[in-house]
Image 1 (cartoon, rainbow, N blue to C red):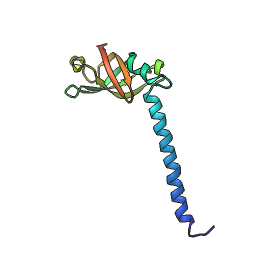
Image 2 (cartoon, rainbow, N blue to C red):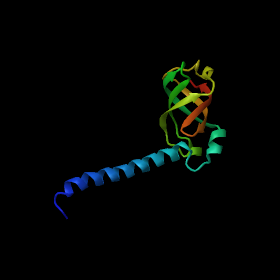
Image 3 (cartoon, rainbow, N blue to C red):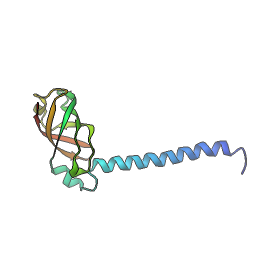
Image 4 (cartoon, one colour):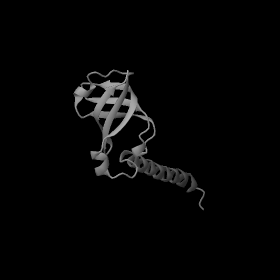
Length: 120
C-alpha cells in the first residue's frame, strides 16, 4: 500500500467506524424511548407508575426533571429524565428534592406526566 495513503485512510476509517457507533447509540436511545418492544400506540395510551425525587422544576414551562426508580413494564432502569406535565397545575404543590409517586405516558421521545402525588 502506498505509504502516503495511510495517514489519510486511518482518520477516515476512524470517523467511519465512529459514525457507525453513533448510529447504534441513536438506535438504542430510540428503542429506550419507545419502550423496548412495546408498540408506540400502547406506550402512548398506557400510563406507567413509579416513584422518584424531583431534581428540577419549571412551573412556568410545565416541565419537571425526576430521578426515578426503574419502570419494569418498559424495561427502563432507574435514571434521571425530563417530563412534560399534561396539566401544569400538577406541579403547583411540588418542590425540588421532594419524593413523589407519579404516573406518565411515553409518547415517542417525550414523557407526559399525567398524575403526581407528594410522598413527604
